[in-house]
Length: 133
Image (tube, rainbow, N blue to C red; front, side, top):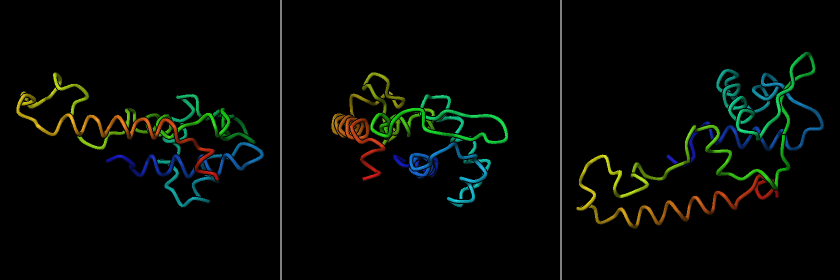
């Protein structure tokens, strides 16, 4: 699936963090967005690991955007939390990597591959700033 719950929660969290004047901890975000704290914590950690968020430790710690919203695209967000690029279909990126060994019989792979490319381009162009407008 292209937009999973993890991707949805990541985008919602980034919207809140983009409007904050100081870091927000995962518990506060969890309550504000009604997201399970443990699930949200993993999402925030993944975003920090991939350079989207900065993590602050201590009593006044939490998370804050590391980049400007215009510099954070949806492809980066979704790839960070999913651990892989979002895919519309479970189809190999290359016809030669087809797990079914029937790629030579597949008449829709070229279409699916082209569609995925257009979606990847769109997600790479769409930024958090666009979503905030």
